[in-house]
Amino acid sequence: MGKYPVIGLLGGGQLGRMLQEAASPLNVELAILDAAGSPAKQICENDKHVSGSFNDPAKIRELAARVDVLTVEIEHVNADVLEEIATKGVSVGAGRPLKKVPCHPSWETIRLIQDKFLQKEHFLRAGIPVAPQLAIEGEALTAAALQAVGDKYGFPFMLKARKGSYDGRGNFQVRGPADFDEAIRSMGKLSLYAEKFQPFVKELSVMVVRTEDDDGKLRDVHPYPAVETVHEDSICTKVFLPPRGVQAEACAEARKVASNVIRTLKGRGIYAVELFILKDGGIVVNEVAPRPHNSGHLFTEAVPYMSQFKAQLCAILDIFPSKVTLEPRVQSAIMLNILGGAAEESHDVLLDEASRSYDKDMDVYIHLYGKASKPGRKIGHITVTSPSAQISSLEQLAGSLTKEVDSI
Ligand code: ATP
Ligand code: MG
Ligand code: MG
Image (cartoon, rainbow, N blue to C red):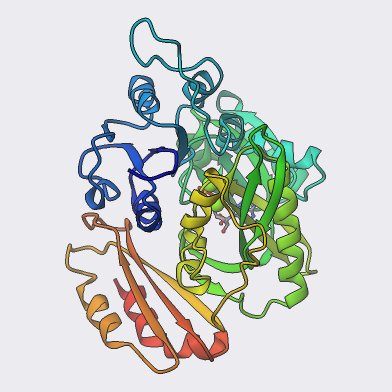
């Protein structure tokens, strides 16, 4: 169809759906591996799609055989198969040579990031500021071991699963000896690590684009502006641009640290760097996602010429415009996640409110993902932007919408 290489995408959720929205105007063909009818597949017909799990080695090989380059919308995929396909190749028919299909970001990056403990050990070696941490195997998780961590890091401290966690599932805050039994019961079978608690005043996120030449040599990193992320029950619910009450210097520093983080990884694409801002202004890197991220959604409207999804495409296809500055075209923006409520129709009132909320100082954009509503499930988001209002005024203008989102 188009002049560009065909991209194979592991995972067809909302991130894939929005990647497809960015791909359509460029005639970039996306072949998606996920269940039939998944959010991304709903909006693009393609005979190269594969039905199945993005963790199934046979299905990943089937997808790879049909495309030129692979990418992901989720990091919890089979990195060994991605390595095999990139280095040894994949069969494209009897008697024909194996075809090597690269993956961006690199399978090495995906493998490293999957293990949050190893990810941060890697950052530590690169001189990136991270919270002190130590590995604990699940079977070694005894009250004595937990007390030893408490003696070293103080209470509370974080107990985290090394692999497979998202939205805070796999995290446990140990407040003191009274929590030991519950910690052992709920986490005792996992491969774990303990992390010193960071008394942050704000959580920030910086999306960074990484470009490389065909030999994998870093061309450049391009950070978006820092945004403030607000988490409730460990799920990101709101994002503010610019961050509220954070000095411009701290935001600039966060951008610099995030750029340095992404310089240490391999592979083209878009990355999210989650950071904590401490009371003294210090910055600590929490973790990296090697893909588009909830905290980058508002750039679809705030940096309209280069959404995070278009950035992912352009980086992968090596057509990213090197002079792009990624500065916002709006004064302020807020993203509100729509989480499923107790009933399927819980969010209908919100949609009515959003449709009515246009104001001369506030533009409102609704994004729904084509997902059935389940309690706590991310089923859409709303972005509001203002050409003129400061973030505090935009927050006021969006007050009734925020109230509606919070009440679902
Ligand atoms: P995600 O959905 O972002 O992948 P996750 O399951 O990997 O989340 P983390 O990012 O490790 O989990 O932690 C979730 C949230 O818990 C953080 O955004 C932060 O609010 C809080 N948190 C995590 N680690 C710490 C820490 N060391 N000190 C204080 N708070 C923390
Ligand atoms: Mg995570
Ligand atoms: Mg996180």
